[in-house]
Length: 167
Image (cartoon, rainbow, N blue to C red):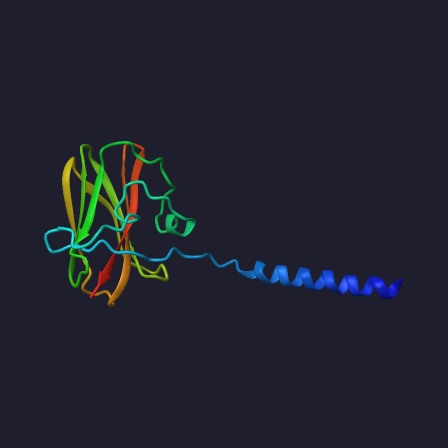
């Protein structure tokens, strides 16, 4: 009887050890930067848009929400609209444009692929109408970065991201 229990115990211990080995991966999986909406110096599209970029209703993972110092707000149902940033690729100044019929505050983060914050800008006032913000990307290393934005007003937010190639 002892001989038949021992192999079974060894088998179950091995299965448990193998299945728990994957439990050690507590490190979060960061979002991948894929797709680029290429634009010229005037904001005109040079390629098909990346459907996950430059939206106002982005669904974020916890690591993305943690880039900002305040809790998630409900998404706005208003007329807010983000245009693809330009120029993309960018070597110096990137322009970010938002249009809304109400006053808002913008919170921006630019991160690298490891989610190191390269640029942080908070409480930028957006008055009703069209607002363009110029961001200096000239000090960034060449490669792909991501611009995250939260545009907040009246207890709700527009949020999203866009990938930018830095040259």
